[in-house]
Length: 193
Image 1 (cartoon, rainbow, N blue to C red):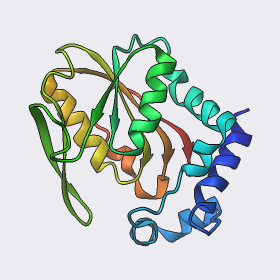
Image 2: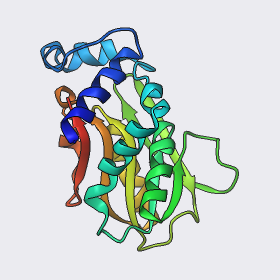
Image 3: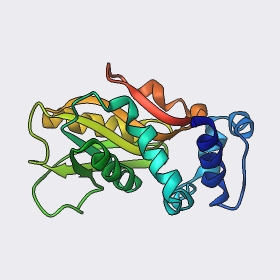
Image 4: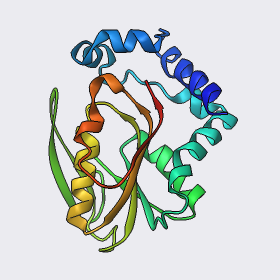
């Protein structure tokens, strides 16, 4: 069932940092306070990864809306997007392409720079990783403000891919990242808190 998995996952998500927050608390915090509270490294998903049943269920819920989308490959965003993206690619029977931070890929790359609340960053992928016209599904763990996901979509545009959608484990509603998804393709979150 979806609801129990969501409740279990929400608990596991926050227990990993030593505090259990209820959904109502997240909404009351507001976007700026929530970003400060979350910080980098706030989200510990290892309890979910360590539970084979919960991990398998989360992957199934992540890919379910895209089963009939004829996905050629999945692009996972560094770093947890690699974990969920690779498992999702196996589930959909397609390939996997990593989108990495600068300087980590061995061959020629294409890249996109993007702004963050606390600075800037860059995403890269191999120049030949996606063939033009390939049907690509973006996968990441969390949608916060939407900057990284938007940058990943822009990188796929540069590669000539057709984006069939984006799948995320968690959407933090208070941060309104969905508003930056300027695509006709669906944006699916397993859990919205």
